[in-house]
Image (cartoon, rainbow, N blue to C red; front, top):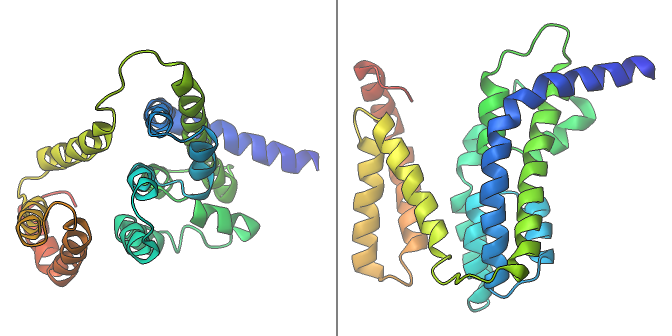
Length: 241
């Protein structure tokens, strides 16, 4: 029992430093999300529970508008799948990593997010540190940061006195920041341009209220069909994938 406790604590000490940058961003963004939920008319219970059962930052922001709109379970399901579709590829990439993790595997799968994937997929785990416990701590700590930030934001939102009009724009700003960061890292902007062009075409065809689902479906289909040519072109030009 004492030896098992030592293994667990050693893994925590090795994993925690890698999650510190995530802690800073998740606490801030999580609080923004919690405040956004509060000013949209929801108690702190909503962001608290959603940060546990959903744990998908972009999806949770979108879920606010879903909860405020008319009841459309099928549309909600499709949009949720499309928004989080990248996790299908994350999961495939982690098949070997998650081997022989035993009872930890279900939570490792459930808690997989962009940041946990990045750490667990790329970090060289120190010798003597249990791989399964290391990845579990990374995953659990990252969700804890988001849970804490979301809950605090939901609680503090009730005491905010400044004008929060326009706070819902945080979701748009987040996606714009992600897009700009991706654009800067690319030498060839194939995937970014595909997203922009398809979004513009679908906006014209379907209108501002209904273009999101067809846009995401078209982007997913086009990137799937042209994935190999794009990857080959990027490899030939020396771009990072």
